[in-house]
Image 1: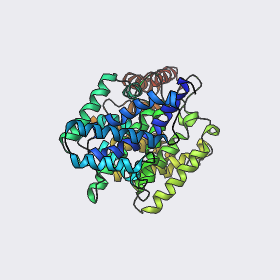
Image 2: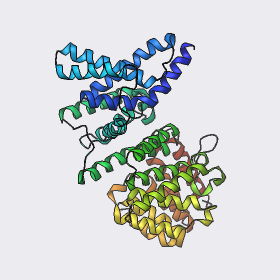
Image 3: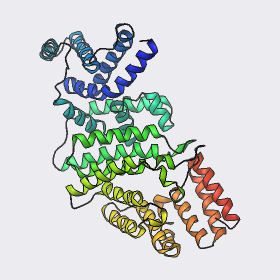
Image 4: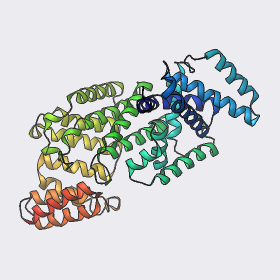
Length: 418
C-alpha cells in the first residue's frame, strides 16, 4: 500500500470511527476538549505507523487502544486521579487489541455526545461547528469552507464551545423527562440547519453543497438508530430524505437553480423517496400529534407522490401548512402557506396573505418575501411591480446563483412575460 493509499484509508476510517472514539473518551475523561486531543493523538499515530506497518484488522480498536494509552500518560503526567489511572490501565490490559469499548456502550456514548455538542448553553453557530467537528469528523478547514467563514473563526468557535461546556460543567448525559424534549429540539435544529445550508446555501457561488446534506443525513440516521421511538427524529429523517431526493433535478449542469415546478421529476431519487416515505409512516404511527418536522415531511411527501406538477395536491399542502402554523407559528410558515394557497386557489387568493406579511419586521431582509410577491404580481399581470419585487429580492440574497435567477426574472417581468 502506498502512502497516498494509506492516507486515503485513514481518512475513511476516521470519518467512520472518530465520533465513536471521541464519545467513548468523553465518558472516560469527562472533558470534550481533552477527549478530542486524545483522539487526534491516535490519528497522528495512525498516520505515522499505518503506511509502513499496514492497516490493522480492527482500525477502530487500534485507535481506541492508542487513545487510552495517551489518556493514561496524561493522567500519569499530571499525577492526578490515581484511581482513574488504575481503572484505565486495568481496562487497557484486559482489552488488549480487541475492541476497547463495549459494543453496548457505543450507542449511549454517541447519544450523549450529540446532546453535549448541541447543548443550549452554546450559541447556534457554535453547536453547528462543534457537531460537525465531533460527530461529522470534519476539520476546521472543511467546516469553514462549507459555511464560507474564515478558518480562524471556526477554530475560535470550537475552542470557545469546548471551554463553555467545561466552565458550565455540562453533564455528559442524555436528559430525561421534559428536558429531553427541549434538548432534542435543539439537536434536531442543529442537524436541520446543517442540511439546509447544504440544500440551499445562504451565500457563495454554489446553490447547493451536497456534502453538507450528506453529513446532516448521516447524523439524522445515527439519531434515528439511537432513538427509534422518537417521532420527530424520524420526521426529520423523512424530511431530509424527501428533500434530498430532488437534488439532481435542482440545478443544471452549470449549477444554475431549477425551480420546483420546472424540475425533471424523472431525476428525483426514488430510493430516497421510498426511505423518506417509510420514515414518515413510522413517525406518524408513533404519535397522533404531528410535530414540525413530521408535518414538513408530510408536505414534502405530497410533492414526492405527484408525478407531475399538475398532479400536486396543493389544497392538502395548504392545509398542512395551516397545521404547521398552529404548532410553530412564524411568518415564514405563513409565507409558505400563501404559496400553497396560490397554487390551490389562484394568485388573487394568495396576494392579500403575502401583502399582510410586508409589514412583518422578521421578514424585512428575507429575500423570499419579495420573490413570492413578485411571482404573484406577475401572474396577475402587474409586471412593473413584479419587476421591482424581483430586483429587491436579488439585492437581498447573498447567493450568487439565486441572484442571477432573480435578476433574470426581473428582466422577464420588465418585458411583460414573467
